[in-house]
Each structure stands twice: as C-alpha cells, then as structure tokens.
Image (cartoon, rainbow, N blue to C red; front, side):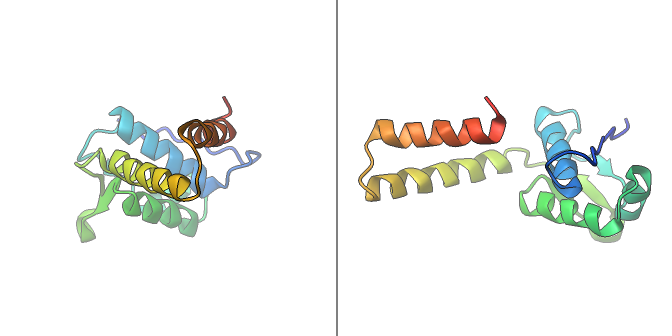
Length: 124
C-alpha cells in the first residue's frame, strides 16, 4: 500500500495542512488501517518535495489529534483509536452548545451558526 499524497502548491491551504488533512481522511475512512506504518519524516518530505519541518508539523498535528502515534525508533503508525477525532469533535460541539446557550441564543440560532460555519469550511 502506498500513501499517495498530492500537494497542490497553488492551493489556499498550506502544504502541511493538505498533508494533515489527507492522512487524517484516509485514516478515518479506513484506507490507512490502524497500525499502518507511515514513512519517516525525511522520507515523506523527499517524496513530496517538501521541507522536513513541513512534514514534521503535519505529523505533530496528527498525533495531537489522535490520528497517528509515534513509537520512538520503531516509527510512526496510524493509531488504533480511530474515533479520537469524533470524540474531540463531540467535546467541541458540547462546548459550543453550552456557550451558545450562555450567550442567550435559541436552538435555531445556534444551529444556524453551526450550519454557516460548516458551509464556510466545507464549501457546501
């Protein structure tokens, strides 16, 4: 299995964000199964024509999100806990709902704000 990452230098998103998003999406979709060993930072940087720091930044963000885990000298792997992102999203949604209620927004206004944010981010 190959990683098959494509970085668009003309895209609005920074290369590290493109890399982070593509690996995260593939892990969540099961294309990259739990336990899949990712290339080294240097190896992937060379393959993609990126600076090693760019790949390292993406890996750090993925690790913070619970998508990947580093096992010291053994390498970097797709984490077994694939639902870590869903748990974090649920926690963020709860925090948002609590804040919206504290601010006095009704259910529909809170939902509309979420819908607008999702459209802005996902381009719906």
